[in-house]
Image 1 (cartoon, helix red, strand yellow):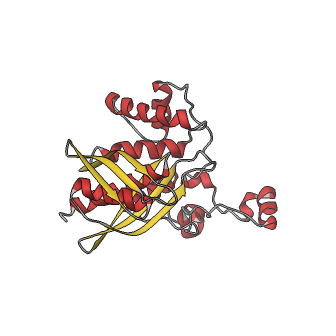
Image 2 (cartoon, helix red, strand yellow):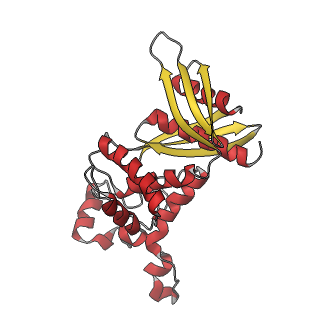
Image 3 (cartoon, one colour):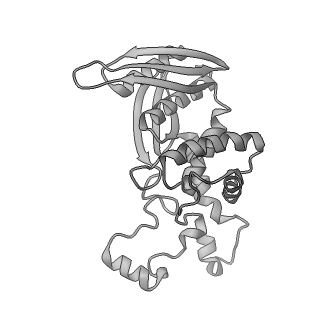
Length: 258
């Protein structure tokens, strides 16, 4: 971006499609489980955020005052409403193609099923929602363990109990647990189902977009056999996203042979 912004000074250019920088950053973050810090240059959440009045006034008068590059130059254009619950497969395919996602008919059917489930819960489905949706669909097909369902019972004065079903290489495995916390109870039930033992080292939750109906993104760090593995997942439900993120961390451990 320095070369693109000050190319005349440096007398150099690149063939990089800079509009893919933000999406590539999110992809790397999802695959590694490491969070992009809000104040990270160019791709951070605050890179193009302006809170102070004098900054906002300057931006409205002349954008170049505080932004030497446009958000759209790195693919950070605002995501408006793109689809709703009445949208069909053709509209979904067209919007996904705009995001750079080419799906065959079977993959589109699976993505459309998940999209409909999400659209029934959310009034507005944004580009970031769709990107997260397709990412989940693609990654689950590569996983050894896939979270199928969970049931948890919790409340003040009772010990949280959880039961889960996990697909392990095509076979359904069930697990259950009693623990002092709801999240811990679900995680231990997953341990019981897959026959592994993980220790939660870090747990983070954030909203994908604004609003009370936003998708939840959960990132976890889990220690297995003395090594740390990261997992990330998104869902409309925070607990479901937590369970899927934990399962993904165990998948990473399984891939290393732990």
